[in-house]
Length: 439
Image 1 (spheres, rainbow, N blue to C red):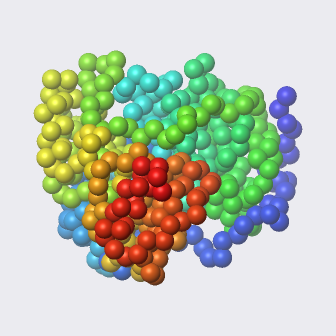
Image 2: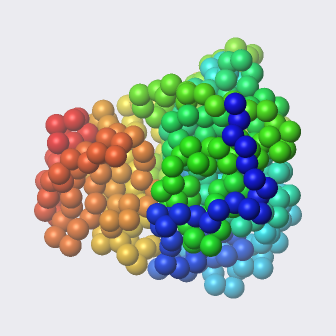
């Protein structure tokens, strides 16, 4: 039985448990640049990580002409341009708009959508969620209410395999075998089942439900409310009913034991074509690597790239016979194409000199500490904020005034950190031990 709900205007104010931010949402975008130590920074939202090769060419050109020449992938499958000139804003926004990367100025920072990157390619999952992706992005850009979401609010579209369901999104859609979709708002254990054809609309209504409850509180994300998940879910069920969308509460999907990033290499599936999956060392792509990716994607005319939330790239639609040579070319360009690369599972924030808060050049330290592939991923952070860190189980390496702190993280649990002096050999040994589960 669905819970009754009063009209939106009578929704109660957020509870006193909400955690308001002490300043406005300064999350960068394409129209609102952030001034970093290495120059201005633009964050380009790429819903689902999907780029046409023409759009990819525009990003490479802008990075080379206006910025530091590199494209920086984020943990949401977006792209950052760094080292931008302070006077580049007009040209940047103009080119983004012409290429289709900026469909709505009011909504450009809220188009945060991650999606299962292998959906429709490898035969796994319950449905191809690409139609959901296009529909949700269109609905977002048409909603006046959605323009009030923060630049940190996140949607996840999971094709049923459970990969992006692990990323802690504010609103998650998961495809079900029966053709319906499960809608989860925040970390709720239960979900609402809705017709698959209405899933994108249900996701937008879930976000608008959050905005109603968060009004006046200053919170940006669902978890900031610290509200009982059933309250949000009951409100959502009522609003879905008002929109003519039937829903039913049920237990949440069974989650896989760990996050499943696409493995580097050839991705086989039920189609005549295959895909290639490549990792990007530290999420930083130079012009030669980007050109190798776009050239590979363009081999049949047009083509696309799919950027993943694990700082990788998937290139779909290759002929099987051509795939091995194409994969080798990506490897020759410096990308990760197999499980034995020492870069597998290694990530880092921007660190010095790009970030004023960082205590160290963590990318250089991570490079110096490269060793055998570990059982666990490792993430290097220049300060306690740990920007862009992974979820699940991972090795946390954080710069401190007197060296580093190395600890093992499992979900919400963190082992007591090991203090390591600022010594390359000691640091490499401590990280290798922790990645092997010995730390």
